[in-house]
Image (cartoon, rainbow, N blue to C red):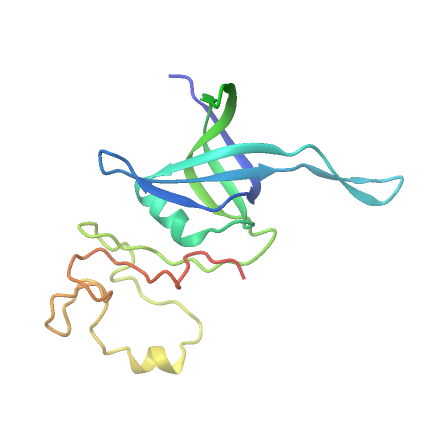
Length: 183
């Protein structure tokens, strides 16, 4: 199959919506606005070009991470497969550009982000056993150095092996803790 794969820089232009399909697959979608800008040298002012709108769809783990991380207005980079989707509504029809996202992240040219790895049940923790190479540890980290409560250990005997308050082994975050939140 000859897919058109592209990378688009833009802003989340709608609320991020999450749904579960009839077959139980998690899906997240949002609209992406991409507007080219250039400096008009004779006037010294920035000029905005025509905005191109895309519908972005993501599935499974990526869908979960997008819904926990992004909101309307956030600058993002979307990499995925481009396709044209026909629609019909209220006697009108048209086509929309849709990107099936393979990867999505914040545009670090326009802000800062903090990355937090999500550890899922049944998958090995890629950072387990890796030494902390941080130049200066905070007193809290030093005080917890002997605490054996990292993911995978049931330090309290309550069946919670990942520290998120349940026993399913799927490390979850509260909604207030946004992954990759822009600051």
